[in-house]
Amino acid sequence: MDLLERLITIFAENGYCAVFIALLLCGAGAPLPEDITLVAGGVITGLGYGNVHVMFAVSMVGVLVGDAGMFLLGRHYGAHILQWRLVARVLTPQRYARVQEKFERYGNRLMFFARFLPGMRTAVFITAGTTQRVSLSRFLLLDGSAAMISVPFWVYLGYFGANEHDWLVTWIRRGQSSLWVLGGLIVLAVLVLWWRHRRRARSRADAPGQAQEASEERR
Image 1 (cartoon, rainbow, N blue to C red):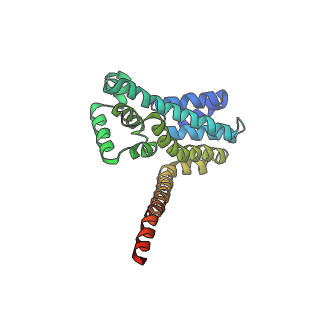
Image 2: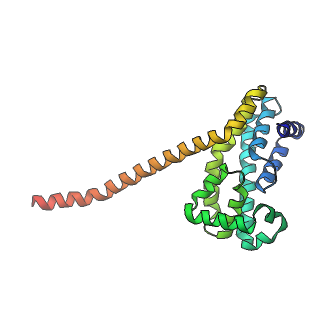
Image 3: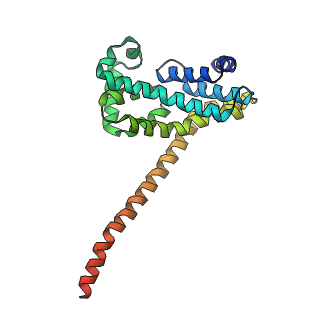
């Protein structure tokens, strides 16, 4: 966890601004793990270098701005962005084709689950922009919904584990699988609520017709 220690030192010296910039770099595909960055931001607040709730807000904005930046670049430049040297390192033609295939299979849901796929996140967001299949507002809704699971998890984990190094390292290693379980439960709950809403809507829509049929039968 040498990277975590270095980030804690940098963030403690430079505060929220350093965390925000680091998260923009994460969104741009820099070789900087977003989860470790968020944990380091939480740790410095646990050590007294900031407020954890402010750190959470700064982190959310940094994550969403970084992700939206990649989406908008893909949307503006289309497939031509693959010719950029920096982008080509993250999104090769072969990976671009695979991500497009996944969009065909899973649709816009892929943008939600990309939050939990560190190696694919930037590639998915750029490709989402190039396909022109989704608006910026819908992108932010899907990405923001996933970020509301992952960002507070990592930030508050760092906060509560600031003075418990061994405990923190253990939970960082467990964190990715834990997030998958939590994300899956939330998606399942949303689907159940959506299904129940549609069922009630159909019942209300069918009620007038059923009442009319009953009235005709009585006649």
